[in-house]
Amino acid sequence: MYTNKCTKTVSVVSRPLVTLQNWRSAFLEGASPDDLLHALRQRLAARRDDAAVIRLVSPVELDAQIAVLLTAAESRADRLSLLRDLPLFGVPFAVKDNIDIEGVEMTAACPAFSRNAARTATVVRRLQAAGAVWIAKTNHDQFATGLVGTPSPYGAPASCFAGDRISGGSSSGSAIMVARGELPFSLGTDTAGSGRIPAGSCAATSSRARPR
Image (tube, rainbow, N blue to C red; front, side):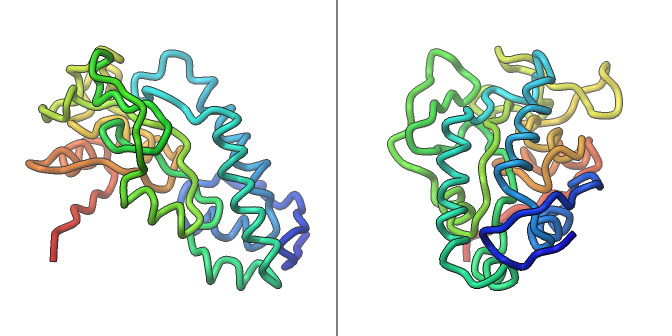
């Protein structure tokens, strides 16, 4: 089934949503962001004691993000124009928990350091402006000061290939969620390899931004 109307959705997804193109195609074909994103959250929540995740988005927080998407959809004539204006419409991503989201606790993997962020980091804000939806805050070496991914009071994320192997770090949780096929992309940080090392250890791809 197919519709190009922004506000009409149909059940079209019978394949796994792994890549960015998978998610874009699903929405172009008429899938509902409400259905897909809440289903994803439920699957992630079913992973009990997942050391890759410090905090999942709450249902209320997720609904607030979806409401913004639906408002944007109402002002577009069809899904094609919607995805042209918002190329990441409804696409979920994770955020390393040393990157701020306004009103959301940021721990830097240290409970004693935790605080509610006063504003959203620019990188997150730009992704949301393009339609993306944050779904989780991810675990990492405490204060991002390591390259193995294990020194965290929230648990030691293991390699997605073997539970007795390290994931690499410090952006361990962000790399693992992508490598497991749960998200098309995630945010980490990288000073001396903190993004590239866990990506390489988990057979994911990492891109390190450079200032102009």
